Image (cartoon, rainbow, N blue to C red; front, side, top):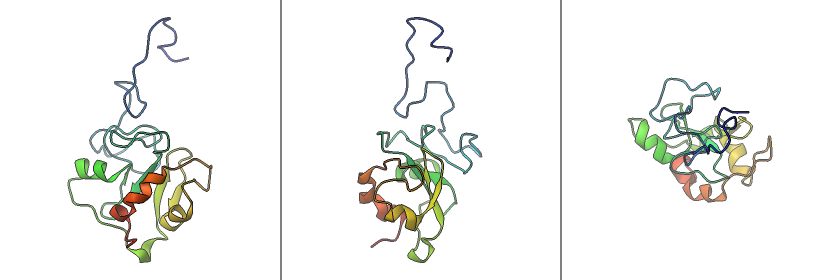
Length: 142
């Protein structure tokens, strides 16, 4: 039982990513975040890697950027917090482990992610099919 449940009638407010105000939310690129085994940064990152920009039920991935080796939930999180321009993964590196499933915390290769048909091959979590429209911001797919 969390402390809010012990007080009848008290409502717990949550932000867009599902975190309670004052809870551990990544805002500005800390060196580490103990909720993840890999470096995840961004704006208001929740435990399943949703962020201030993308926080729907299927927004549960973070992508490691080739330019810095850090995982971000989206291109806007990288833009707002990284302090450098993004770079895209070249095709010859699609075997790199670069996509984190926020549900099971499995890290997928880019190739696995692109072939997964919007579903985590490790746990079956649904990934947002709309993310496909942004693949060119992360990967050299054109």
